[in-house]
Image 1 (cartoon, helix red, strand yellow):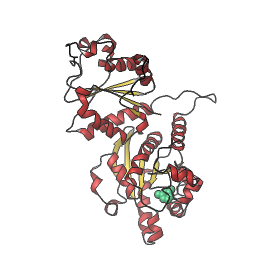
Image 2 (spheres, protein in one colour; image 1 turned 90 degrees about the vertical axis):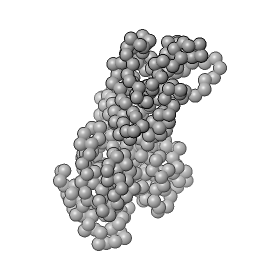
Image 3 (tube, helix red, strand yellow; image 1 turned 30 degrees about the vertical axis):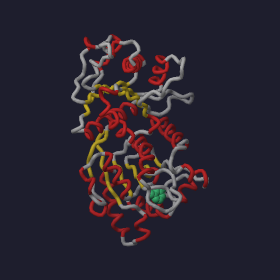
Image 4 (cartoon, helix red, strand yellow; image 1 turned 120 degrees about the vertical axis):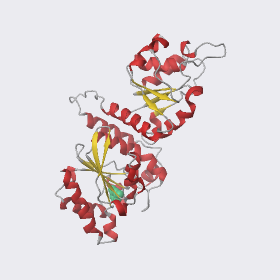
Length: 362
Ligand code: URA
């Protein structure tokens, strides 16, 4: 589980922090981003409480605006010098605990110099900063998010009794557990009322090609397996046509629970599940993401901020789009959803021809 702690001073960077938080929400689960430690009960040692909140996180974003260094109280004393300043306590605690601390410079702030910092924070100057400006917000945030994800996915997992577990397997298991426990999902009631399974996906965690469909149908939810109904039959035929087996690739969807009816996913459902899909991408690190249908295509285009965002699937299907993710070069290949063949048989040839494009990378 990757937890992110946002440390900031309201008067200094409030205009930015809300935007940063909203953007992080598109990539990480709401419950994994902490901004304000909840009000503390009377009698609680607040230094200890802040330190434990920081201990529960993997990354601390220290948001530094133009008044971060100089902000002072009514008596003119600099806040950073006060022992009970929460900004100071949280950063010092993260540094002491050897957490990943990323200074995030906003409002044209520059990195403070060590001699202007209290001793407890001096080490901060050695942490590489990322600048986030309103003008280049999307681009800067993409860099920040890739840095967070890259660092988190590089973390070495603890060895298990059975020997050192593969990092991918550990992360995958944690992801599966989180999906099973996704009680806040807008589709959780549908899952439990119908005794459906969530459908994380299937295939090789070392696959070079990852397919992302739309949402599991009834058959898939009853078995907890993606693409095992009529669309799956079409998909299997397409894979066979390019001599691939299911075990060679990874299959998943944009929405990971059956919506309860044959319908398009809602924006709320997509927003809920994409942090899971992002984590899958980070674990598998595919060389190719083949999107099946327009919803997965639109999400991946938006995630990667591709210039093709305004394109329709009718115009762009079968194109190879070269771009980068934090782990390296990647190609996006937008494909029609296999279900189109069930409605329009003549589309089978089109889909087959598009699948041939994938062989360029095999
Ligand atoms: N359609 C999808 O998009 N995904 C499945 O898993 C099955 C049908």
